[in-house]
Amino acid sequence: MPEGDTVFRTARALHRAFAGHRLTASDLRVPQLAPVDLAGWMVLESASRGKRLLLRMQPPDGGRAMTLHSRLGMDGSWRVYAIGERWQARSRHLIRAVVRTADAVAVGYQLRQLALVPTGEEAGLVGHLGPDLLGPGWDPDEAVRRLAGHPAAGIGEALRDQRNLAGIGNVYCCELLFLRGIWPWTPVGQVPDLPALVGLAHRLLSANRTRPVRSTTGSLRRGESTYVYGRAGAPCRRCGTRIEAQEQAERVAYWCPTCQPVASAGRAGPAGHQPEVRRSP
Image (cartoon, rainbow, N blue to C red; front, side, top):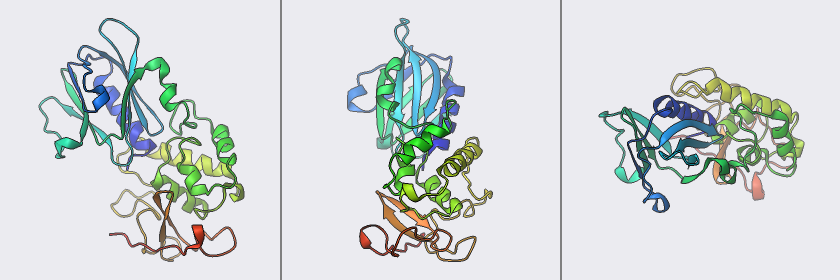
């Protein structure tokens, strides 16, 4: 699942392969960009902004720089291949973008959003995002301020809201809350030490930004890289209690009911329903 660390690595891979090179061909497979031909454009840089990817280019006539903006969503990805290398075995109908140079080709699969905008107007697409956890301008105080501005919101939903801080997806959300001992539906206003939670988020994403295997436990072994995410019905790695899972704002929250006790009266989750335990496949 693409989160801030994944997009950061993707941006670096695209930058290494494309920055300073001219495109020889492009194929943008979304209706509004189908007529666009980027052949001859110079790639200036590739950068990430939270869970968004920005490929900045300049046309051959030296006109204003443009940015190919992509949002990966839950299933999107970019892959870089050498010319002549076999592409990943995926159905061709999942491809949304292809850009080539003389030496490399990048293929965008299942991109949730693709747009071409003047680089000076990127803010129209990413300006609403909160501080970027892996960006050079990371501002923890602003991230805390934005989270604290919604005291009644459940902390799980607030962490995943990219308008508060950019880069956290469901994996990091579940793992962060476990590590801090916080029930996912705890109102933001009742969360102790928001700065510590934000600081831990920054450290976790930073630790994983350069390695392909994401781990919050310290182990890179298959099946040992998370404490609660994807482990419904399995024993907690700390106390042995069964991990529970329930839908929260179109995602599935995972938590240990012992290590992350309910913060308010009652045992039920949202809307008064008992949490549904789901077993990992």
